[in-house]
Image 1 (tube, rainbow, N blue to C red):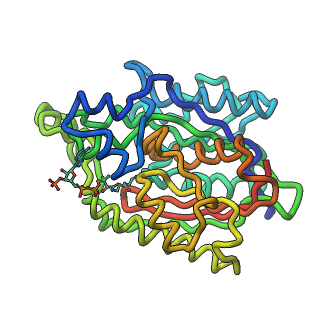
Image 2 (cartoon, rainbow, N blue to C red; image 1 turned 30 degrees about the vertical axis):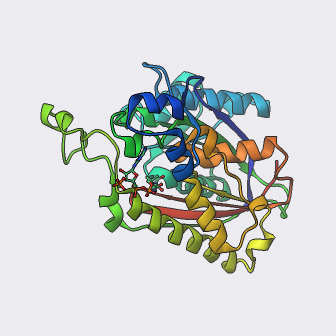
Image 3 (cartoon, helix red, strand yellow; image 1 turned 135 degrees about the vertical axis):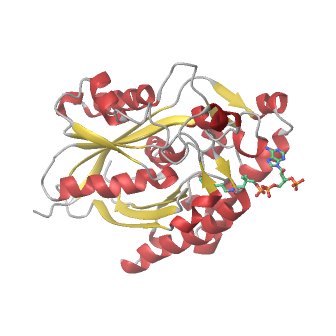
Length: 330
Ligand code: UT7
């Protein structure tokens, strides 16, 4: 079987607590001006102690079911891209299945950092396309605040917590739905963005904790350069493959890591500002959740209508990067 697949629903959830740039001025040697100018971020949402990834993901999934008029029992497969699972195992998908009562679903987590949502969507789509499942959800969900060193000004101001969920179903009409994905990795970039502690290479010890190895470590400038070049390249590559140009795109939805990265990529591609969504000012970098949160807001704000070409693109630790092309359905 080779069916057309569409995103038929999208929802999001962010925890209520907000950390503003002014809050960071009291915590580390930084300023609202530096953060705004260098990243575009004004505020980000952060969980209260005791709130886990599966709580955010479950809330996003419940909202998705409500808005679609279905129940979690109707879901057949849950895929959760994340680098901040509740724990190594069981998977966050298992935790969400239990918390939401999605008792007919199986599921698993995917690790691809900021490209997690695109890699998961590219995976999920195959299950619907081949007729294995009719209702699959992908929930990009992160509690980045659980792996951030709030004394390191170079990383702590960048990240936020949140979840975005999409429902995939077969598309009845040919002119809407997911068209193609290009996903790439380059392991030689691993040294520029990583969390060295806690896994099998450096199992947790007092020493790994003392050395702050359970936090995000990033060489920002190297990541920045690679991100701009490769996100633009992969976006052009997928458009050319389908005989499209940037002008054909109604909305470009890039991973939200830095406003300057987004603007540089858009400039390289020759996109107009009106074709690009930027909401990093409100949420910071929520890793695998940025793209579904953008898709939710774009839909709510009426920026995309049925039949519009939408191009999503990401870049993240690994390095991982990719693009996804679709015609919007909702
Ligand atoms: O989503 C996953 C992929 N990640 C990314 O795409 C992130 C890519 N990188 C970036 O977004 C940027 O590189 C950062 C926002 C992380 C940093 O911006 P930058 O313009 O590349 O700054 P930099 O790291 O080169 O640092 C410039 C200066 C340094 O001071 P000196 O050495 O020039 O005196 C930093 O210590 O800015 C300093 N700095 C800060 N100053 C005030 C770094 N962080 C801060 C801060 N407040 N929060």
